Image 1 (spheres, one colour):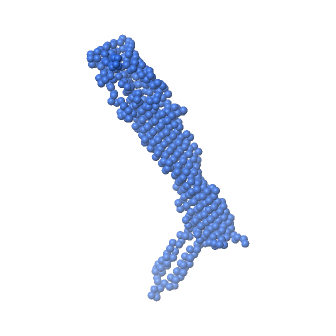
Image 2 (spheres, one colour):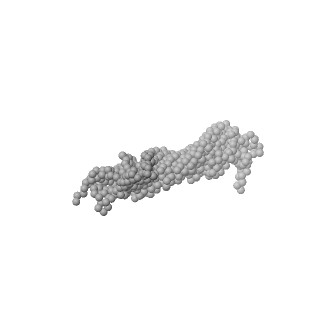
Image 3 (tube, one colour):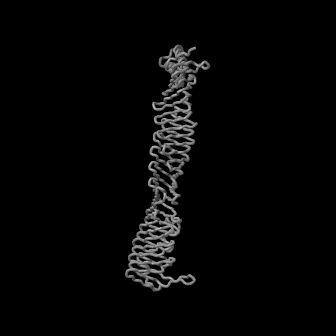
Length: 549
């Protein structure tokens, strides 16, 4: 027997069964009230008749008409009722169903008019809006709950420039949300997000994805467990341990966001970034991937294991394109020089490396203090050239070495593999050695060059208006030293030779004026050279003292 062809849009011209019953009930009540509406043998007036009629109408329809608004309408090339269930229409050929602004297309379908649901097969397409559609192979749609389930090897949902892929998708029209829980991925522009579970809202444009999440934009990859991605702003928010990889740089965080358009990462907790041998940790981190520039806030620590350098502070910046890092706010740098650890504090500290990641230089600005076992210092600013192992101090520098103190307008210390090779005191130099609380050896000149051998002073050249006060000692056979006099004098230049840090010979050039006094007869005005200040109270005794100015 041939299947009868259905007229197009058949269901649209019919009433639902419940509405037909309501219409019949209302008609019966209308006739009853019209013929029997008298009280004590008198007919009701028109006003009372209308009142009772309207009351009966409201009681009859109650909440019944809302069901009719949810009915699924359809059209198809062919169809027939299911023999086993007459509530079900079996539809074929270009099936098209509509429901409250949504269009559904399929090769065939089963429509249950009693349950108001729709089961469709083959070439499924759902048009939710002009720009939002879903494609699949099988569909179940419930007109009462307004929820659709779609299956296929790959179900595809397209919302403007966003595509969602999965083998099983549930779409809730009440919340405008598509959900998958058996792996899926979302593509938006150059960004593709993979996860085990996910939700996408085509109104808010927010994708919420969970479990084994990967965000891939071609240049970098983000790995996390929970991610919220807004397709309008291209911003991804993460709330669990997260890793972002870009070239040789990796960033870690447990709370933050990633702007995939401008490649900007923001970490608000457990922030860390690693590039080669360099590691940066802090409370809050901003990293601009395109220009390889990062800003760090709170408990900033930058470590370079290859160069044995650590920078710390309250705020920091790092720029990989120039290999320069900076810290400020209680800034501290720790580096190893010739096997000796150096601690240096300043308001701001900047360090740079070469492209091959060799330390180039370290610059410290304002309130600089330095501590190392063999030498300490302080100044307004300093610059350390790691390639040449030269440290230069500017702005009222002071250097302490054992019992020695040196000051000048500028001090430059040159190191080699054996340690200190030369110390240059440039302009207004004054070197002091403390003998005891009242006696000090002093060398003064326009410029002083101290040459070292095996990390000990070998000789010093005092150039320009050279002056000296030096206590002469004698050592007995038991090794005890005793003072035998004081050498005082001036000359154009001087060279002083040392042995075991003691002057052994003084050579004076250019009209020298030298005197030797017994210690008790030393003129009081000659005991201190002009500009003498002993800065022992400002000398750092350990690395923690570098923060005390």
